[in-house]
Length: 183
Image 1 (tube, helix red, strand yellow):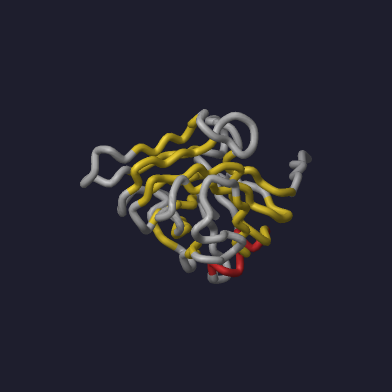
Image 2 (cartoon, rainbow, N blue to C red; image 1 turned 90 degrees about the vertical axis):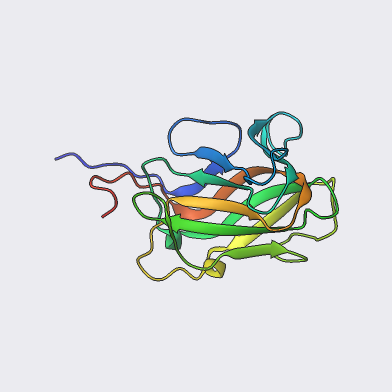
């Protein structure tokens, strides 16, 4: 009888453009503004390594997502969702983080986390420096039995932009790749 070895630890969702396996970064630009740029592999300013996610000329409706490909997580295996942000200008101080589930990653689950002002380690009005944002998993208020397969960053205010890097789930978890998907 074969048994699988499962290593549980922090799970890095984005740190360098590792575009294979579990992490896929994708963007959705606002249809009302063609000057919006969201680059999921920017070499302009990284917190860790050489690449980050960069947003420029952000308008309401511009978003980017990190998904697990064909995998998913149980959020209760983790304690926090952490990312690093460097805001490009004064109006870049509010981003909502939404969480999705479902075969097509189209069912929003839990409560969105609003990163603004002085929440989760983010200092509003501070720009040009890297800040660490730590959102406790409990802030998302996931119902029992919830599984997650996509995190979406939704800048709420029009802004000059941001850099985001080193997106990590902290805890003792693993990305599951079940068959059938999900259980």
